[in-house]
Length: 373
Image 1 (cartoon, rainbow, N blue to C red):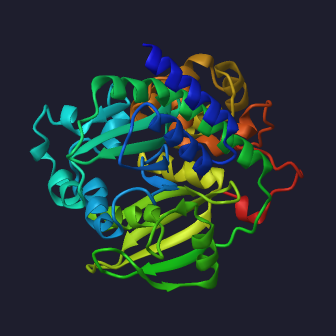
Image 2: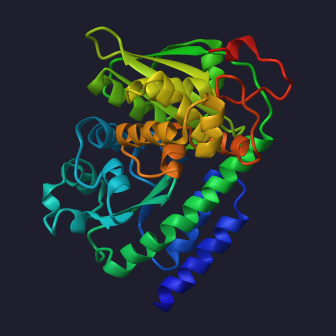
């Protein structure tokens, strides 16, 4: 349809002009607003590993005092058409009406959050490419106007991959140009209130919190960490990677403190082998399967892996089959997205030099002690 084609052209122009993920999300919404009007909106970047938010734009979204209940339903208790559900669905965009088969009253989010805030209609979309889900947008309308229609949904679905590709380009550029910084871990203790607040934070933790790009939150704690804390309260522990303002990534690991509602969060700059080890353990990879997965992520072909590990090509194929089954992926590109994500891709595009363990050799030729495994 001509309307969709015009909108995609505007979105493409907005993506080209963006200089950061937040400005990209702003530009996407501005381009969409001329074709899919909304009373309120919010958008967020997502961690491809967990589908948890890593930052975004919230100022034009729901009222701040509605956020605790929304986050609880989204990440702790579940509801209809959650971001995690949408990320796995056939279509990357859906209205609340379509997700409930026209029975929107089935949604606890509608009853507890949207209607009390003057919102009746909701359209959600995730921006994804074959490597994973990178961002999402939520458009909202009040009850005094009509619902989003099938054309609106189709427009956002067609915009999904172009926006995802643009966002990934920005992340890759930021990673390539980001300055190095010390690997300084930090601890944050969150209180047991319904909306997690900071009970204690070290000086280093305060620095990392300030660097998280999560604009529009009225709380002292970024919404990304609120979501993480609620997940940890429900499941005992949770981990997410957060993109910070310098373009680097931060790993946040949250755990429930004993039997209380308090949550401790360890913040530390993400390092490739740490993420690989955590995910390898989580999915039950054997040591040799983990080696194969690391080499695949490094861009090595099956014959190259066979030569590095001194095994046959058939053995490599067998290991790779087991890796695919355990991680529920169907291709090498999906494996890369699941295990190592976008901040490692700049290192894999130019025939990376590998060490004896199949990991990236430091450019200086000397391994930092903190990077040993």
